[in-house]
Image 1: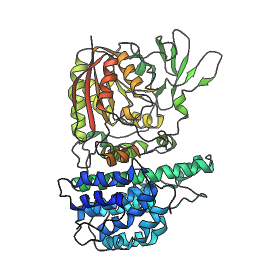
Image 2 (image 1 turned 90 degrees about the vertical axis):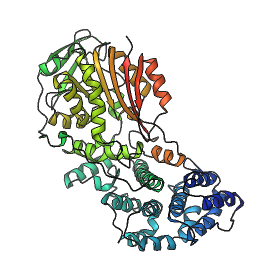
Image 3 (image 1 turned 180 degrees about the vertical axis):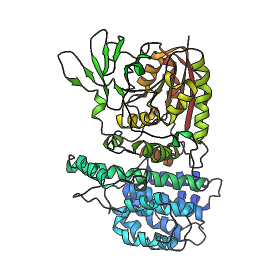
Image 4 (image 1 turned 135 degrees about the vertical axis):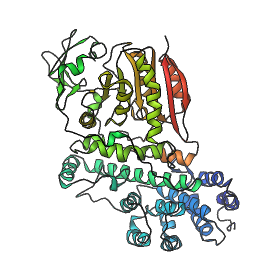
Length: 528
């Protein structure tokens, strides 16, 4: 089934790929893709263009199996994507000339298979062919997220009414009303044309990265399996966030401190004042103590640098359901991509048990507070509160919209807005810290871990979940290509040894480390 040679650079890797058996196919695919492409860049654009006819010939060969065709579709998609934001570059033009057999393949099925997903990834790169691609997929039983992801990839930017920031994990996951759409239009109007185009392009790359990661994993494994969260968090009544009195925060007086000078705080219903430098920190509407905003005597209120970050969730702060969108849509999709959790091997119940089993004994050893760091909308704060007691927990995040959602379900938990880079927590004052699915979002992971080490008591426990880079170079590219406003360089994941070295420098020793796929689960203790 090997095709005619084509350019000399392609002949060997393509022949080896076409002759590869199931056990060696993924490795042969990486060698083939790596001949022309490295981490999103064409090694030699002319050679890539010249190789396209040979790749299409291999596709059309009647002896080519479906798995081989799927990998060829991803290879072609990678080469086309490397020319983006140019949509009609030499490689894309060459592939476009050979689309008919690929479109016929789609028209010939209603089933969603790994090959279908690979073709969805490739064909979503051709907005010039929007009508033909949509027609080909019209009879395919795509899930709503896949269909809207395909449609968005085939859509060109409308500079007069751009739809930004609601693309990932798919447009289907952002079911917003007209009021919320008007809110989007308001902040989009503040962008320059260059910023609008750059944001659109980043949204597009992120959608392709999800589609590509899903297809690549499916070709090597099986079709993805959805995960259902059975935790009672979802059945608990959610009320608008109410006020919090001084007692809510005063019970943590031994831990919470001034971010300016680390002195103790005096608490009142309207906020907290530093006993050392007299800095005042207000309690924001909804009962959130805002330790990121500093009102000094004789001066105005100042914000931390992170307040200026363009974060899609902050832009969505108007949404009363932002917490549900995050926990039910964005977070599970993030775990699927970054953790290679397409088979649902890590369920929410497994995460719950990991946290609870390690925090419960840590909390029992002392009455010191437990910090849920980067608590988000509170789904895992719920678990921490169940393990340690709600009156023992401080939920800290920099996103006030998420904390408002958290307060609506966990009104007895003290919610604090502050930066993880400068924890408003006294030295050696916490019995435990939970940092779950957050380290990869921090601007300085090493500094965050150093802060955790500073704040934990000797013998205190850290539970941590984050992600490592995939071994497969193409999957690693898809991980990195998830580009969000607060992370324009793409997500920065880790090598496990990096995390271990940061923990050791912070005085923390690893007592357990595990994780399937590219998950990293760590339990560490502060050395005594």
